[in-house]
Length: 193
Ligand SMILES: Cc1cc2nc3c(=O)[nH]c(=O)nc-3n(C[C@H](O)[C@H](O)[C@H](O)COP(=O)(O)O)c2cc1C
Image (cartoon, rainbow, N blue to C red):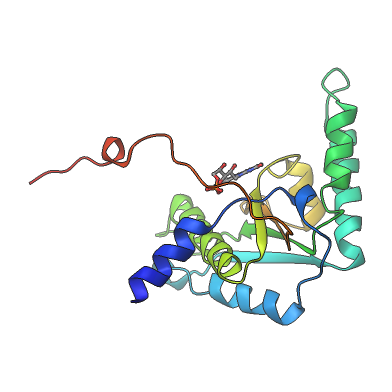
């Protein structure tokens, strides 16, 4: 029974473009519940490296304005695209919350950076699955300046920390198209024995 429930949630979780969200707000209690799920990700040596900067209410638009300004300030003049600038600026127009997720590098040298990043990715998936189970639309985005040092500075990360993504959360009126996987599973699995 549990397997069928978790299978349904996992297979029906879809990425949802923030511009297609409907502007309805998610209760902060629900956001806290999602963060609690994220907090139960596996973690080698209990470093628990996931960190979240939660933008809500007017801070959502402020973050998008700031993100767009960072893009403008850091894109080389010949690469700057007005359409991209506007997309970044308006990405939060219809969403409820944006959560910036990063890996806070711990002091335990036995735990590698890749392990820390994997743990935070697992935390993100926990959050996304919780959202899917509540019919909350979500997108894990690494677009814009997510991985740029300017974003690290803006959010107050240290040099050794690592951005993992921006999670856009909201509600949606329409179900998104069915998911697809292009590479057959058997091509991803090497069975031995
Ligand atoms: C690390 C990571 C970064 C992603 N960044 C973006 C992004 O910047 N923009 C976007 O539209 N989708 C992004 N996605 C979502 C993927 O596009 C999406 O997972 C993929 O299309 C499969 O669709 P599904 O999530 O509905 O199964 C990202 C996903 C991952 C795991």
